[in-house]
Image (cartoon, rainbow, N blue to C red):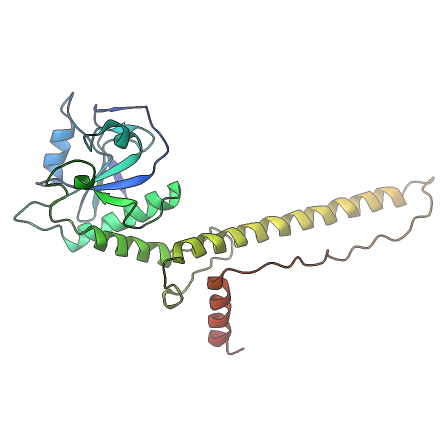
Length: 245
């Protein structure tokens, strides 16, 4: 996903934690959005999408002037879409926007649902976002999240789509990612402890005045008991079937 920075003079740095993504339509194409957002003292948005093209006008860490209610601008990211009353947004525009929404939501811990992906007209009386299908954007964004690796580890883990159903799927994906990251960190901690222990033993044994010591138990600590999220149990069952175990 390539983003071209266009810029706009219409922003400030009064940002608050990002809570929502607001969907707009340009009532024109990306070229007209570029021109509109360059006018000093006017409006702006964070992104504009047309087919496979993404333009960025305002950095996410800054407040764009997009929705007409200032404090809602401070808490949201606005995405404009190439569409008009006589021209629906293309399939490519939906696909590109869904990838962008998925990326934004993952980085900012925003749930991809109808409460957090909203239309401009849900904030202020306006025709915007016109013909944009927000439910479709949400479905496609969730599909993007499901299809992506859930944790950036050496061993990439992808949860099959057929296992991910129900309202809690995003929460469960986050739980799996957390478990994998915790496991990787704990494994590194254990390896470091073993190295330090061996260094201490080697240093102690080479000392001429070292007293006799009781052997140290180097076995792994007992496993802690915890309940896996349902998606983990389902994934392990699916993996066993695939491997014929």
